[in-house]
Image (cartoon, rainbow over all chains, first blue to last red; front, side, top):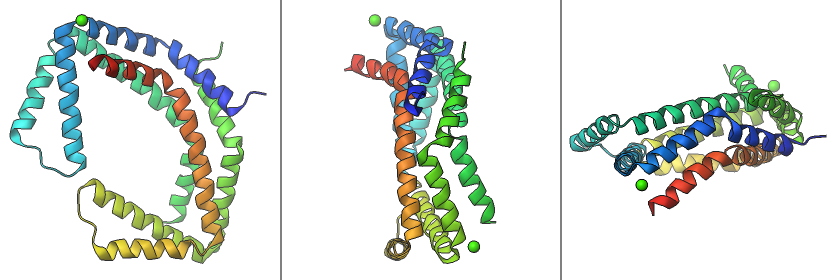
Length: 119
Length: 119
Ligand SMILES: [Ca+2]
Ligand SMILES: [Ca+2]
């Protein structure tokens, strides 16, 4: 009989062979092959990370930082390699979210029921 | 042929039938049947949530709040129903983390490789 882990490995294999993953991998390779796009994309990701960390630590984001992020976002959108990659990331993320929702349903039920009881 | 979603539903079924889930469910029911334990546990969880939210928004945690959380934690540890529940939650959490690591390995590989290229 298949164990929980066996099934998780099956699922991993399916994800690896999914259109979503194949397209994401391809889109990343394409960006990596275009030096200017890659540079802009890396800068954009770093800016995003920096702003997220500031927000999480409760630090204020300056007007200049917000403007830099906006400019960086406008720049990357000029590159089809990058917009393709971002679309592929979004499709992959939708798949993973769907799968997570299915898998964690037993836990949601358990905690949901408890939440109701507290009302 | 089984689709990605079919396999995710299989995995959900396995999790629902796992010892970890059965024990967690049982431990929750036991806490729910003991009014004093349930009240203390709900208060502890609420205190935890409040402190987490403060930390995430960068707000300072007062000495009184830290002391309340400590006292609440000491109180709940006097109740076997609650320590059993917390152990069951930890075992469930270890299983879910294991499964997540397996399932998201393709993504970790993709992002990991990219990280290396940036060095
Ligand atoms: Ca290149
Ligand atoms: Ca009761």
